[in-house]
Image (cartoon, rainbow, N blue to C red):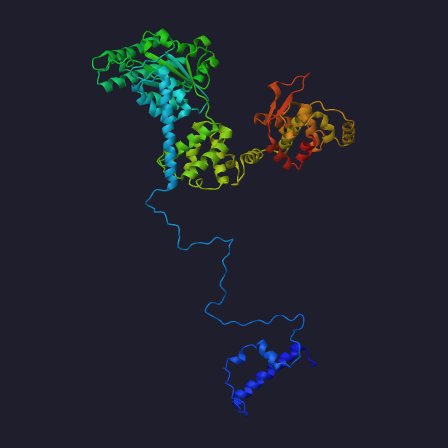
Length: 620
């Protein structure tokens, strides 16, 4: 009893198990007056002792309490086929019904997304058709002309509906409607679709026309001779198509290089062609169309006519009036500017069809439509273009052309389309990273602007940008003195002369700090707020440039014929320029302007061990 209760229980359990082993070995012992007990099952000795049995074996009066801190006894369980307890359902986690599985889409059926896109495109086309028909009704277009105008309207979209209907108003339809004016001007910025729309309109309406590019001529006589020759060829082709005999005078062409300056000579050359065309229109079986004898002359790039001759525009505008057969001619001037801006009086200015520039959204939509159609075709040279997906073409238009090419070329569809087609011909550009696409587009933009790839000027193939490559190539044949002259000129034209004492004279630094501490105001506060390397170069006297040159060289008395010869070499190379190109006089010091940019000045400073940032950043 002196033991704790837990120890007592353990001793009793040990005694009981020992007695059971002995009884199992000896067998049941018969006692007088006591019935023999049934033998215990063999697995009974392995089970834990129940509290009732312990209470019977324990002495009466013994407390049945465990000591404080005793952990509860673990209960054994039978092992079934499941080695873990079944998980209880979680109310927060949604159950998945294994029987309800998503059905796989049938590859034979069209995709739902594509069906929706086609339905949306069909609705948009239907809305455009309604809009086109409303515009045709507003302009009073006949049913005979609608069959030719609707394909043009669908091709160019709502952005150019007003321009196409304006051409129909002034040029007619080529069948029943005659031109409303003998001269028409079509003007707008470059890449707005003037030439393409005028050409497609004349071809779609079946109007007989000829085309002249004013940028290819150097005199008015040459242009008029070419006009007479193109008119002769047009009439000969019409006679051949109609199976009509060609007059003998039309079988002889205008000699190459011949010029027709006088109006009477031009009349004599053009009269047979226009007369034969009029006789063909009046012949039986020709249909008797009022426009059969008319010819439309398109003068493209008409802004070049003032360069050819001062009175070229007035002479061409008066051709339908002064020629005897001039009523058969209709002139169309395609220009980037109105004719009134080229020297024509407002009273003489013909009716115009203005082409507004495309917006960014319209440009992107047109680029995507045209490049998507041309992606599946073959290149002009026979080389098959890479067929990209719809997403890749859209990325090229939105992230490539509109982001990297449009800031330099504007919304010029001609240049943007050529760049897009060149990118599609490169297999490495389709599906590549944005950095690769940017590099290819910027390289093509430089080629369109006439800027070559300057990395080919390097001796070793290095991956450098054009500015660094140009600076490296320019410094290859420059002497150390010429580099010092370039750097001196760059600093002199970017730094104010009031800072010369601070930068180039060590004893003047304290004086400059003292002057700045007095609170003196600067003369050009607006210009001084701009960093020195962004300021426009100023004309500086030659004496100041030579003084800065001596300070950078740290040697006195370097002025001589070699230094002046180096100045002239840099002037011939275009790096230096004399202001006004005036010769030096005794009473006037010549002024020099440095045309070198920051990359070349930085390269020269690195070769001469000069800290360029100390001069440029401290002068702001």
